[in-house]
Length: 314
Image (cartoon, helix red, strand yellow):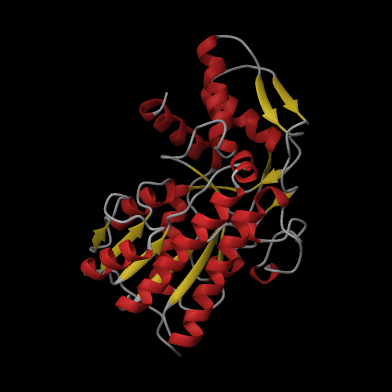
């Protein structure tokens, strides 16, 4: 049996996208791995520029790479900036993956998204549901780019025998999330709205859509732990789902966030706004069978996120 273990102790590990929510969580998690953590801000290397990526990776010589860099956002951002979402993400992943091959990176983990699966995929969504149906129109640009990244890793494994793998996380939330109402995802948007109502002492929390869609939500530090686990223990062509195994309606999520923020306010649903995919629940049985499980329950994670929001944004 092939040994897939890849200890990180003593390795030079580059977290591409270290300032983002996932990247910053990875940096926190890697501090206990005995490795040298490499980071690069845009002034050092714009990942959309191949020459800059080649120059930086050639001089820093990472042994392992987490590709957490991406242009991300919620429904409005995806729908209003389709060119940015498909171009930026295609260019970032192709530059980093190809340069990793050229400079001899030992292992690379590409981070995808659960939106890669068909809009009406059977629930929970298994890894083999990829490319079996039409995508959700509101985030298809981002999804297509992420699917291309998965295929790049598969192609480089086949042609060049590169140890490049992919992981597909469910919907994420946590410290360093984006709380801008025009470009954020559902958890930070609802949290910012609830906090605004609390500060004003009156008002209602407006929730986009009908409140009926179901979402699976994972605390970002759990994701970082899962990614490190896969980097150290997994080596195969198929991508791996990372989820918690249960979901919650947007209505129930809004009620929970209001409770965490400490505000009693009426929820007003705006059906003129899009619902997005009706349900997105991952089948994470493959990862769980390897021995990894998430630790953070939803309300605890939301409370930690709100504390971070109070300290850093509000």
